[in-house]
Length: 208
Image 1 (tube, rainbow, N blue to C red):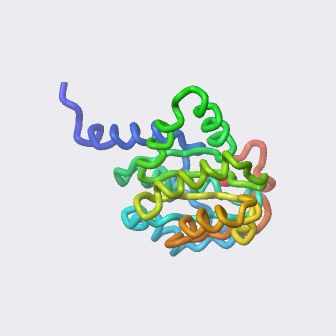
Image 2 (tube, one colour):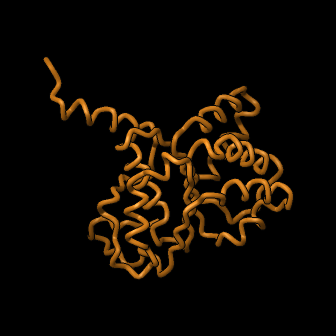
C-alpha cells in the first residue's frame, strides 16, 4: 500500500522531533504574547524562519524561573525539525553528568562528535552553579566544535553579564563566551512566573 504524500512528508519531521528529545511539545504558533514578559513578536517570528540556523548563528534566552525560556527553546526546536534540521535538547546539569560518566566508559569522544554535528543544539538551564575544571573543558569543547559551523540555543536564569562568574576561570570564560555571544541573538524575558498564573484545571500554558 502506498503512503499518502502528506504522511510521507510528516514522517521525517516526527523522526527528527523524537530524536531531539525536546522537553515540551511546543509550537511557535502557540507562543503567548499577552503576558508582560518582554517577548518581541517580530524577533520571534524572524527566528521561526530558521535563517539564523542556516547562517550558524546562536540564541541566548535569559530570564527568571517560569517565564517561558525552555518552552520557547523547544518551540524553536520543533520548528527547526519541520525545516529539515537535526536538533538535540539537553539540560546542562544532566549533560555534564553524562560526559563525566562517558570519560570512564569510552563514550566521551562519540558524544562530543554527536553534539558537534547537530544542526541545532539546545542547552537548557545553564547555571547558576559554578563549573568545575572538567565542566569548563567540556563546555569549551562543545562551543569550539560548533562555532560558526552550527547553531546553539542557551537558556539561563542568570543574566548574561554574570556568565563569566559561572565559568569561574577568566581565560576559559573569555574563550567560551567570545564564541558563544558572537553572532548570537538575545531574548531577555521578564515578569512573574507563568506557573503561578496557571489554574490546576487549565490547559497547559507555555512556561519554563
